Amino acid sequence: MSARPGKRSETFTTAVAEKKLKTGSGSRDGAVRAGGLVAMIVGVVGAFVAYQLSLGYEDTRDSVSAQILATAFLALAVLGVGLYVAGALSQLMRLWLLRQVVESQERHDELVAALREGRS
Image (tube, rainbow, N blue to C red; front, side):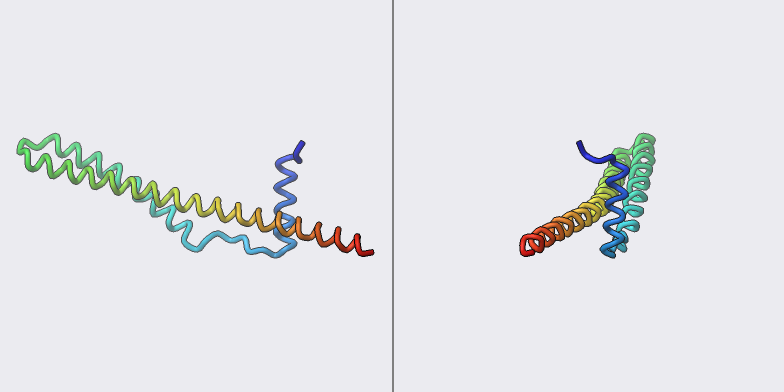
């Protein structure tokens, strides 16, 4: 059985503090995620408004132009999703890498201790 999730979290936090590892988030992660969120909202709202405007035009050329604009706004929304996901994944990968560093250092310390005991 593994340790309690809370206990593992406390152990991890303690190990990071003892080893004085840098734990801050990336300088641009928050800005990328916020920009992605704004792009998603603007894209969806803009696409909806442009499409609703296209329904009111009697001239086919104006209607098609508004539909193209709606498609461009949808592309902006998809770009926003990509930016948001990239920011979230970079934060997750940073935490994963920090966990790998801590576990690797612990294994290294155990190996060194075992080798020293073997020599004595």
